Image 1 (tube, rainbow, N blue to C red):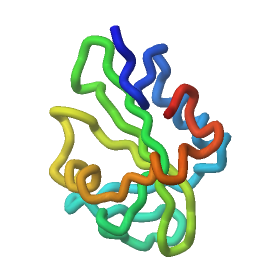
Image 2: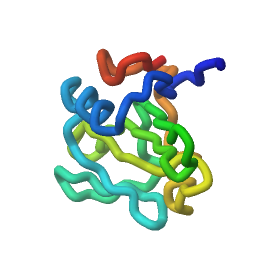
Image 3: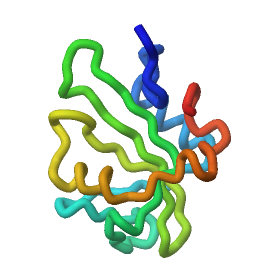
Image 4: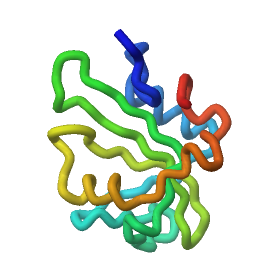
Length: 123
């Protein structure tokens, strides 16, 4: 079975992925709102999805349940510079806001590289 870039094939848990990001300095919590905008847990500023940059993405796939498919996005607040993660559903359980975020946010993963040690096995 071929491995998908950014998708752990080693049964990595959400807790482990979040800890890896935290250890790498991505400590701010972000919240996705219904319209796809994101609220920074540090400064509380709400940012439109089109103004947000994704610096890293880790997918977690449920072994037998598509409802367990998640994506962990490493993002930086354009207002205060806080670095952290937001967890979204990935696949059929995505909300309209999560879909909008994934489509409109700028994917910087292949422009500036993944944050050092952000997540094991990430490309």
